[in-house]
Length: 213
Image 1 (cartoon, helix red, strand yellow):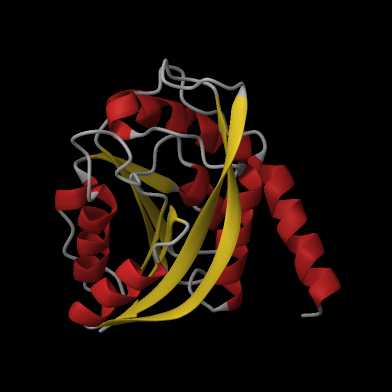
Image 2 (image 1 turned 90 degrees about the vertical axis):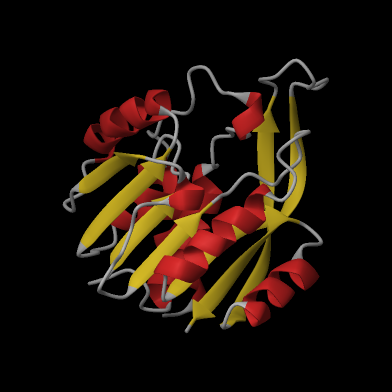
């Protein structure tokens, strides 16, 4: 696929995901931020090009209102599972499923993504935008999500703060994994919590593809 066609396909996916509603009452301790459609489309598109979605089981850990899960559901997976500890965004995710109109059904599971009750007997692709651990008391939150991915996934895609490459690569190496792809991405965060001083801000993030043994 040429760069032009790939870009057009990614933009089309972002347009389809623009209808996905975000959090009605986001919770700061859980770092509940709406994954931008452009970023979700980029992640899903790369995963699709790597043959990590079509015909596979896809799990979105910490799915929130379902952006990554629903993006994957538009690309022909066998099944999709969204996991989140908070029931409110899961309710919104179910509504978003109807808005997106994907052919693949998505199952929504209320559970702690860091202790997900999953024992898959097939190859699983994990897509996730975990908490970065920026809130007091949540330090290392992304590590706990990576631990789950290492346990259940054949391959995972995860979003982290910029500057996380050394940490992610070291974690993967220590857990029989290998970072095969990495790319930078901008993440727009609207003003939604008391500690936000601007209407919106852009933070630099990095996305990593890890193959797990």
